[in-house]
Length: 265
Image (cartoon, rainbow, N blue to C red; front, top):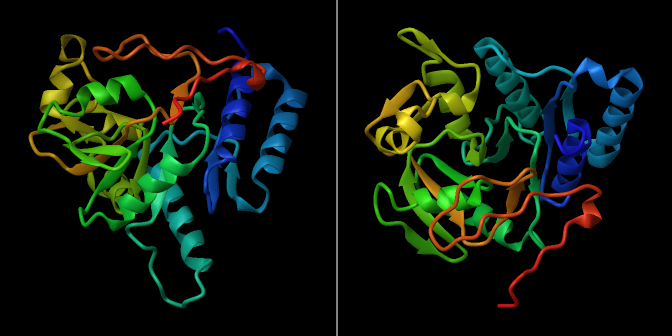
């Protein structure tokens, strides 16, 4: 790696402090090879970054299906207890920025496009909605593979079936993935949410049709909001691109070494 992974993770989390987050839930495990002192310093920095918004901070990755179900229960219980109304349930349209990766940084010049997307998702009558916030060249390339996308402001909206873990989900979709979708199918099993399901056509587009999700469907499940401006970027960049779209450059440390050229439109 070009930079220590723990430093990349801290940089990425620092960029998330710019986002309109109400609460933060982290299940984050650092490799013991970094040493106790470095890990302790990293965890203290994360606590300072998010302050009172940090509701859960566990030093363990979620792996088994039962662990995911328990985590979802804990998060929804905390969200419900924070409501001023008794015996309420968590709004199924509540939005969750979900990631199983530690290297996708928020890079946009402001949060205006993100906020627009969140507002459009909350107004969308579809049962399942997501906002695909990273792997920008790749998701643009996929946007019209199943049916023509629809332009909505700073986004195009596509009917797709994707559980990739670089999306903002409405809570009902998260619950569907963790509580309803099978995590084992015949001789296959997954330990990641983004290994759960995909549309068959999209799976076939991967090299040798080897895209990993174990449930390949013939129906489209969700409205996917795809930004027309790059919002997040994988720290080490991307290896593929859509026609006419330049491959975004890898990011650097320290953060101020990254220079972005934004169009004045």
